[in-house]
Image 1 (cartoon, rainbow, N blue to C red):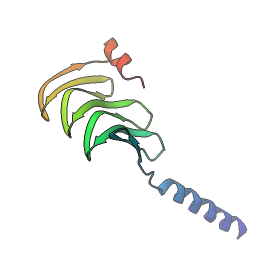
Image 2 (image 1 turned 90 degrees about the vertical axis):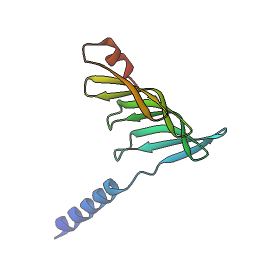
Image 3 (image 1 turned 90 degrees about the horizontal axis):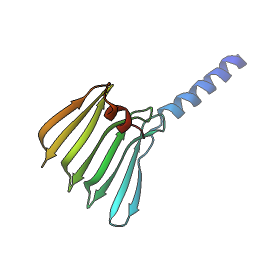
Length: 120
């Protein structure tokens, strides 16, 4: 009976810890607010900035293993410029203007650009 009780306490503790939501972190930096969001495993999911409540500046997203998934810029909440998206061994460069896609260029795993650009 003692073993079952110990097992249930251990299970409840592990379940409670794994079920906790990791809250985002917000830090004021000059006129911006730096936001850091986390995956359930505690690794960083996204880092970016807000100005007056709108996305602004560079935003970087990572997978749960810490590899970049996307990087791009916002101006006053609008996607602009070149954004980069990783999907497996493929890198796609998407050009935005006023939240609209202007063009897409992709590279495969044989490209040096893909390997070097994804490093944290």
